Image (cartoon, rainbow over all chains, first blue to last red; front, side, top):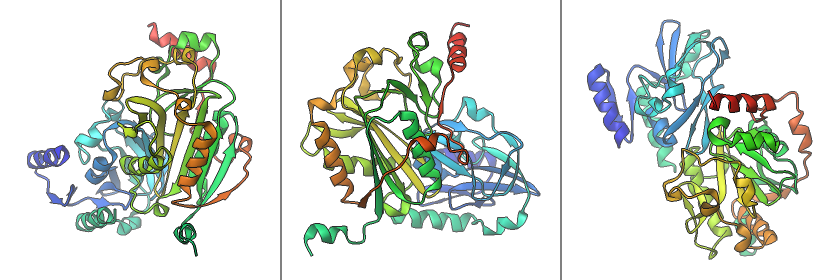
Length: 154
Length: 260
């Protein structure tokens, strides 16, 4: 599938670890929520997006509803939405904190979420308020297994 | 125990609410509130709406989708709804069927648009069995290559809504308020609105359609009829809707932006 090929090429170029498990790619050092968002944590700062599994299942994203900078987010709570295939789908935050930046590029190029879910398709950056909550997130191996199990049920 | 009774054992409950001719804004506000704040399954049926109204999807831009000069002149209300998808103009000839479900109550369906629509096409296949070459075609409900039902969805963490506006009948002059959309399914082949859509009344009586839909729901859910006050959903101060009626000023500004 195009998304897997893109992920491989992007990974080689960027020298990030990408493991292909089943149908979707993951990034080794990121954390993952069971609602299929990823978070890259650097100190108290988090970058959030949706996973390759999610973008593949959603289809072509035609619009991203971004939150305002400064709003609060809570772990598991929705902060925005993507539109694809006549559906709006909530995006939920894997962390609690304050939105400090949004990816304005997505206003003109919502397809970045499909083409580059872990890099250029990032959605928000958050100043984390509760680092303890990170423990409840999955690592890349756990998330890959979670995706396989979820897909196998259907 | 008879076979129909055996099938119903263990099916999740779905509340069935039937309206006739309520304003589409009320219906949409109610649906958004039920999706976000209820934990029940719901089927909302609105048999016609009271006045011609344009309804755009979440990301709809009036300047791109509407013939704004005519819309403003004729004072046609324009709503932006909380689900995705395209633009429709609805009136007394439109039948609305909305299904709001907990994802775990529809086994085998993932909370993603194509999975939900795949299930809904099986569901409506039961309603239209043997009638008019019904199919789901590029996410539209068609008889052959003519669209008669537009559908849209909204998906939260654990629930989703799939709602459809069925063209029981329509007035060709109302289609003139809508531009040809830039995003259109391939099978449309650049046909105008009147060349692209068809009227359900040419295929099935109105009451038969609604009756068969309720029957089809009973294959998946235990149906419980319920009365609801739709008007209160619009004015509910505790729940903030994203569904909104565009103001005259917003439409005028959109119209002005086209001429810059």
